[in-house]
Structures are given as structure tokens and as C-alpha cells.
Image (cartoon, rainbow over all chains, first blue to last red; front, side, top):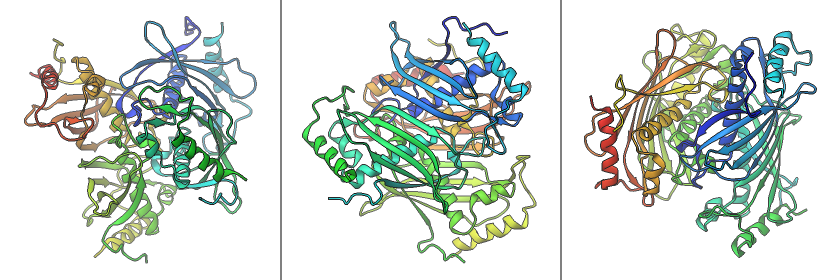
Length: 148
Length: 148
Length: 148
Length: 148
């Protein structure tokens, strides 16, 4: 089993490239959505749940709800860490929590967010209410990775 | 003065192009963020507040908070309307409300959202608490456009 | 049959939104790729070949080759026209030619480009060398639309 | 001085995330443009020329010409290496060459490309024909990094 992350968060490092910025010289606000996605997909991979395998099984995990608060802008060339963890599960939603932090000597939180996913059938796009064993097993892996 | 929109919403029509979709054959969830932005920028233009003029004056209107709920997926080639309006203003935030609707005979809401903006100085990226007359004037134009 | 475009080009108007720009205050070079795609998809729709129908038939038209020359930058808020036409067909490639022009009193060419597509089977991703009748028919429609 | 890359190419590893794909289940063709940019910016950083420093000096390096050939599609979850090197310099253009390769036991080339840049003044957006000493120095660093 993959050992839990030392500080309770999965860390995904990013760097601000030219295409992430806008006319203001800072990261365009929608760019963060791509980083939230990459961080959670790489977290799933780490615990043995590659997203492409889920899709190959005929399932998808679309975002049904997303909240993001922007506190401070990241500038061209900046390095940052997207920190994510899964909130305790109740029901069919997976709620991922996020903090994006600078990597200065004293880290500051630039962005905080929550992203909620549900399992759907890839073909019908309907929510899967009776989660199949393969997915249940995968979800348990993620859950135990983040268990205290 | 620009007459208020007939049904209380500013309408911005969109069409789903290949680059808006993902492996699931539906619109990737982050794509909607670009449409929310385009709809509000074009609404501002309609009421006589072109965004590029605001930037030329040395101001920016960054997003500080965003909430989006995904109810139904849009597919490749679909047409939809991004409907937006400004919530009544209190304080320094501009809160834009959104509904994205299909254009079927019976429109369905695919996405609902709220996006909050504040005025900042382009150079310092600090929030402008004493809003300058030009901006106050512009905000009044938007406000009166959406006044009942 | 759809009448040919008056000046030999299909026109697709665009406006530069904040998310199209980068730190330089001008359109990020990759943004133009999305506009080239939208212009050709809307051209296909105009001649009775909606892209989603092609996909529903089990075909795709991926880009196999792309050349783009950037002459002048478009800035935030600018309006422009993406002009496109199909080059005479020989073999299995569709070669689309492009000019992006400003809409000033005296239009200037900002970008010129060429994009080459081939028909592939959606499932196998293999090039379809014996083009099926439905596609042949569609291609003829596009060809005759651009015929002098 | 940074030692030259062992095989003549600078390697930038990438992974295909959901937002990189389109309805076809493969990487959307415009996504590669972001990877070409990230690879060359990180190459510049490696040889001591962080892009943000160039911008801080008042210069930009816009793309003036780009050619890309797509040979094989990358799928969701795939790993690949963006390989880049600077062609020998003559005149004011920097010509970057690219190959994107899979990381299978037997690497295959998915994409090949060439991207040409010129130095411009950030404010006037005019080409800088008398390249200033700081930039000349930086370019020499890149050139010697790739020298055989």
C-alpha cells in the first residue's frame, strides 16, 4: 500500500509558463482549473488508480461542482505547489480540497479550492449509483492513502 | 442609455467546437470558465465599458471567487446560451450570476455559476478601495442596465 | 446548394478576450490554432457538413500538418476576421488556407496559415484511404462551395 | 557553464492529462503548442536564461513562424518526451527544432516541429535588430549549450 503523504496533502509542483498568463502579467484565473485536475489525476495514479484505466473500464469522473478562491496572483516564471487531499467520503461524491502555495522561504496560499466529482457511465453519462467493485476498491485505496 | 435586457439576462451564444471537448466527447469542465469570461466582457462592452479601456486606464478586474455547478454535459456541435446578470452591488465586489442553457425547443440549464470580481490597480495588483470616478461611472452603467 | 463566398474566402469573425492574451498584452500564439479550427468547422457547417455528424458516422478529420506565420500581434479587445478556403484537392489531404485580418478601415494581415487534414477511422485512428460515399459527397460540397 | 545535453537534445517530459484530450480520446492538436513552449522555456532556464528575466529587461521572444507535423496520436495517460534543440543561428531568428517521442521500450516519434522566434521590445512590439549585450550573452549560452 502506498504510504500516506507526510503532511496530509499530495503535492503537485507547477511552474508558470507564458501560456498560463494573461494581459495582466499574472496567471489567468482559468489556468488553475487545469492544475487542480492534473494534481488529482496524478494523486490517483500514485495510489494505483490511473485515470485512463478507469476510462477503459467505461467510467468517467466528471466535475459536478467547483469552488475556487483567488487570494494572490502567481506571476510568469513562479514555482508553486498544488496541494490536494480527499475529504472524508459520504455518499457518491468525491470531494477534493486544494491549496496552491508559493515555494518562497515562507509559503503563502495563493488559491484555495474544492472540486466535487461523481462516477458516471462513459456511454450513458448517467451517474453510477451502485458503484462497481473495481471502483469501490480504487476509492478505498485513495481513502486509506489520506486516512490519518 | 442601453436599454435593459428584456428577460433580465444578457445573452451570449456559444457553439461547442472540437477544442472545447475532452476524451469523454463532452465539453471539458474548464472550458466553461472561458465562456463565463467572454459573456461578461461582451456584456460590459454592450453597456459602454469595453474591458480594454479599463485596462488602458490602469485597472484590472480579476476574479477573486468563482463557484460553478455542472448539471448536464454539452456535446460536440451543441449550441447554447450563456446568460449572465450582475447581482445588486454592495461593497467593492461585482458578483455576476450565470446560467448556461441549451437552445432546444425546451431549454435546459446545463451550468449555473457565480463569479466575483474586484477592481485592482494593474501595476501594484492591489485592490482599489476608493474607486475612481471613471470606474464608478462605468459600474453605474452596468448596474442600471440590469436594474429592474 | 450553398452559394460560393463572394470573395473566395469563408469569413469567421473573432474578438480578443482576456483569456486569449498573454503577459505581453497580445494574443498568445497558440490561441490562433483554436480560431483556425472554429473557422473551418463553421465553414463545414455552412456547406451542410456538421462536424458532429462526421464523428457520428465514425470518422475524424485530424490535423496532420500545420504551418502558421505570425506577422502582427492582435491586442486585447481587437476584432478580426479569420478567412479560410479549401485549396484544390489532390489525394487524401484537405488543405485549408487561412488569413487573419484586422477589421480596421484598411485591413492588415496578422496571420497566414495552412492546415492539412486527413480522414481517419475514429476507432482505429487509421487513415481511411477508400473514402466512403458519405464523406466523398460532403467533400464535394465543400469543394464546389470554393470552386471559382 | 551548463554541460551540453548528452544526446544533443534537451528533454522535457510530459504526461497526457484529461484537459489535453478532445472528443477523439487523443491529444487535441493545439495542446502540443503549449508543450513546445514549456520545453523551450525550461531549456532556457537550464542554461541560465529564465524567461521572466528577459521580460523584466523589457524584451519578448514571440513566435513568428511555426511548423508542426503530426505523425501519431498520444492518448489519455500517455507519457512522452518533448525533445528540443536550437538550430545554428544565422541572423536574428532563433530556430528551435522539436521531436516528441513516446517512452515505450521502442520510442516512436509522434510529432516533429520547428518554431522560430525573434527578439522584440515589449513596449513597442518592434523587432530588436541591434540585439543588446544582455540578450547576446544569453543567446551565446544557449548556443554553446547545443554546440557539438
